[in-house]
Length: 289
Image (cartoon, rainbow, N blue to C red):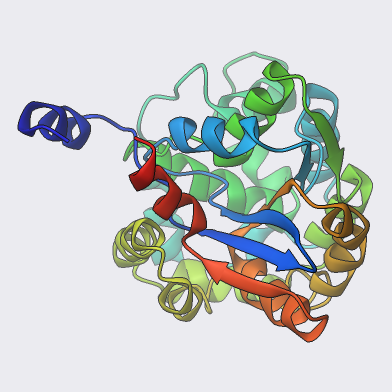
C-alpha cells in the first residue's frame, strides 16, 4: 500500500475485518464471522470479499423491516416495572444527557420514537418509561453511541451485500426466538451496567479490541454488559451450533453471529472435530489487496 493510499485508509471509516475464523473438517471449509451489531467503522470491503466466495450466508436472525417492527412492538409492551423505577437519580441524569443530542432522523432509535409517539415529537422521557427494560436500555445505549459515530451495522451490511450478490441467505433463529431471549435479560444486570460501568471506557475498549481481533480481551471487557448473560450467550450457543452444522458439513458457508457467541461456538466446533483458525480473511486480504 502506498503512503497516499495508507493516509486515505486511515482517514476513511473503512477497516479490515479481523474477527474471522476459518472452520474446516474433512476438506469442507467455511468462515465464521463475529459481528459487531453497531460500530463506528465499516467493513463492507471485507464483507464483499468473503461473501462473494460463499455459496450460503447464515445470519443470526432476520433483519428486515417486519422483523424490526416486531422487536419494537414487543419492546413497547411493558407490563412489569419500568427500568427508570430501578435507577437512581444520578443515573437518570446521565441518561438524560445521553439523549440530549438532537435525534438523527435516519437512526434506528428515531424509528422507535416515531412508532411509540405516533410521530408527534413527544418528549423521549415519557415513551422510555413505557418500554420494557431491555428496549429502554438498548435505546439509551444506541443513542449514546450514535453521538460518537456508531452508525454502521456489520450484520445489516452483510445482509444487504449477500442479497445483492444473490446468495442463499438463511437465518439461524426466528425473530420470535430472539425476542424471547431479550425478555430474559435480567433487570439487575441492566441497572448495574448503567449505574456502575464507565461508559466511555467500555466503548473505547470495545472498538480497540474488536479491531485488533482480540476475542479474549473483548470477552473479558464485555462480562458486565447486560446481554452477556446465560440466556443470551451460553444457552443459545448449542442451538446456534446445531443449526449451523448441516451447512458446515457441505462447506463454503459464511456464518455471521454476534461476537460474544464466538468463544463458545469455537469450543463446541473443536469438540466436534473441526479445525478453527483465526485471521483467515485478514491473511487472505493481504495476499489479494
